[in-house]
Image (cartoon, rainbow, N blue to C red):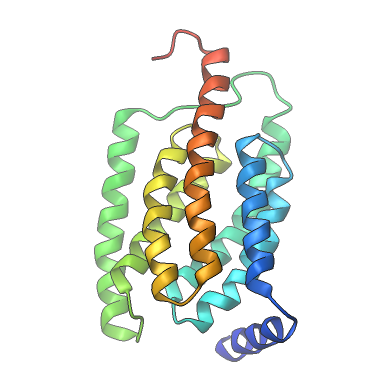
Length: 204
């Protein structure tokens, strides 16, 4: 597996600028997701496949594994949205305070456990930040596939940390991407919030 990823990374690097292609498709994914467009998921699929190789090369192992999850979620999200957006009912949902408390607690616990394991058994330079952004992204991506409104608020925190991780790893275009992400996710929140209020006008 390691030899395959290293070979894939070398091939991508030789092809020109794979990171810029991943950046472009990552932006396309988020903009399309903010508009509840089904085509956000094909963009996410290709972008994640490229980042899988790039993050592995930079020894961000949990971020590399995260890209595998993203590829799977791109397929799952496409299927979920294709069915859900065609069905009557609320296009956007909200979580209760209890659900948020459980989610945040799970992220904290998993960050501590996997960060400690990564610090002990790998040469990863930022094990706890790697762990936090990985598990935060896992949860938030799941929220996107289920069209949970608050996913955008979670992304603000995760993307803010990822700016630092990308800069420290020498992925300058990717750091810029995450900065742009923060602006887009704020717009995405208000866009989904308007949809949610339109279908549930009594919601607070």
